[in-house]
Image (cartoon, rainbow, N blue to C red; front, top):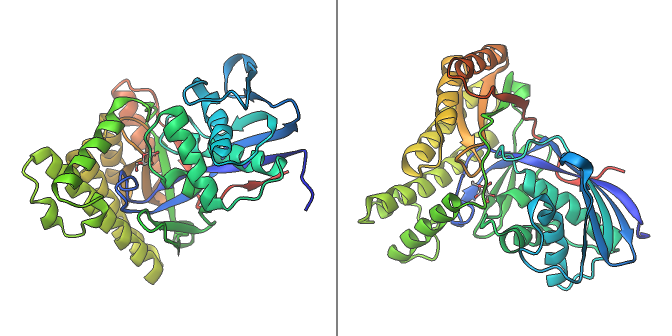
Length: 372
Ligand code: GLA
């Protein structure tokens, strides 16, 4: 296959059915790819420069850096993500060329739907292909995560990049973050008259601030006290109960119970179809939200109110998705109740003078790919 000088790559955002903050604990996650995502038009250049521009940034400013001079934290703002990918590829001894990179996106930023990973993955695929380099998607996911962890400085886990690069249309992906085993489970709610709806609470979050990192440190401390390398190795909630510190006990209980719920949903999806399974999964979603709110303490008022209002208006269940402290809620809603759920959540936000929520249909979609 000849090396293209230029092309367009698309990488999707993700929603996560279950398993929040379990990825860096080497537990289970169950994401699916969205139809919305990031598009990167990548053109090879021979002068060793990366020239980056995003249609979402005011002024259409072009940010130019030399690939050779890239060091962690040497680029700030949105361009740190594409630059970080080039840096991480070079750090893995992959001789990526300079490139002009133009970004477009229909994913909201800071909404907990993985816009950063989508940006990284679209750029990673494009840079590799115009540089004539073939890499496995699993390795590319690790490279993109390294860019986010070490170049951008956000201590995230592996779910987002794996979801963007490895999910399949009409499926959710059960990923064991310890072994990296993947099981694709059929997930097609529309066939059962159910919609999965992402409700953006329009409270932006950031993973590079301290709260996410503090949760991670607490989990590491809990694992240390329980004498396991990662909390994901604990499957009996009674083990989490052995922790003396009540906060660490709650953190560990969340990780153990969310992994168990991820497995339960995957099993239910694999074994049954029809609307009834979505009622049961809805209950698990709501239980997952309660655990994130009470045990892991990463929810926020608008998310709690959205979950409650959506269920009162007919949703089978709902939970916050992503790192928390802002972002979106995922609800499973019988299609006939969609209008009621949207109206009820919008009304509740208006009554409280909050920024109006935004709604996105979350259709389980294919992974990242070249589109032109
Ligand atoms: C963010 C991170 C992920 C994961 C989730 C919480 O999306 O990027 O690695 O930890 O939060 O499940």
